[in-house]
Amino acid sequence: MPEKILVVEDEPSLQETLAYNLKKQGYEVEAAGDGRLALEAARARTPDLIVLDIMLPGLDGFEVCKILRKEMTVPILMLTARDDEIDRVVGLEVGADDYLTKPFSMRELVARVKAQLRRTELVRAELERLKIAEPETPHKTLVFTDLSIDQTRREVTLGGEVIPLKPQEYDLLVFFAEHKGQMLSREFILERVWGWDYVGDSRTVDVHVRWLRQKIEKDASNPQRIVTVRGGGYRFEG
Image (tube, rainbow, N blue to C red; front, side, top):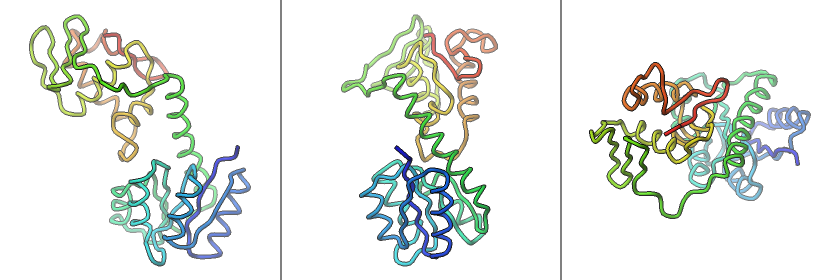
């Protein structure tokens, strides 16, 4: 089945050009010319990606993005005619995954679309590989020899001593612990621990892993608990 893309653009000639070029790439394309129609189309068709112009009649792109983000996790690529950093920041804050300023080449647009769809597919594939299902009642305490994670108190101890962790470090450690022995890619970790709306890249994971190692490893330069899988990501050994 071809991936479905919703193009939301009120300028007829650009809407037609976008749809034509995306169809040439093998995508199934639907178009909408205003914010209200965009919401209706997104809810009815559940697209795999949305190309969303900011300047729309009625509901603007920011408002459409904000509403959709409460209902679905579809990747959203925003378009604007204004080369304004405030627009980019606001767009990302309301949940856009990427941002493209007009004028742009169709080659760049297609490349951005493919990158977002690839990221989504990687996460889906990893979920399938790991067969992850959220437990109905999470474990209250996870214990790995001298390392203990109390999920009720959000407290980590090592050898009986409380280890001070920042909230994101704690969430990352719990995620590792719940998937002990499984290789987890950086992109997958970023998606599951930081969330779809996080503005950043996989280097964020590397930084937090380094901080965690400094706190829970006997020798952070030769880690035994959180090991690096070359070309893949990380694996928690306990």
